[in-house]
Amino acid sequence: MSPAGVRGISGTRGPVRIRGPVDGHPFSSSFMARGDGTHRLPVEAGVRQTIGGREGGTVTVRLTQRLSP
Image 1: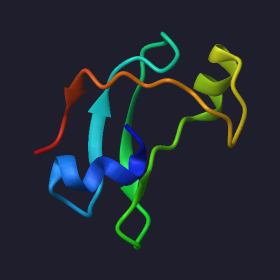
Image 2: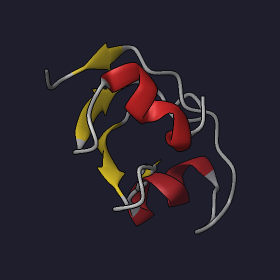
Image 3: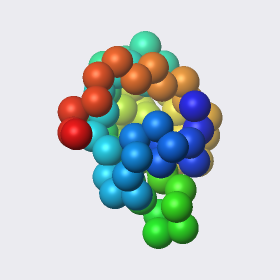
């Protein structure tokens, strides 16, 4: 699922807190509304270093829990 599809699933244009692995590494963050009806999912620098990712790169996120209503 792309962050652009968050609104259709979550029913909100606001932030959506989530938990699940990113490239197999435990992770929690929030899909953040961009103001145009789409969302982005920030991945902290420490997590990117752990998984060998880079800013703007592609990762696989498996959403296992939604933390906000």
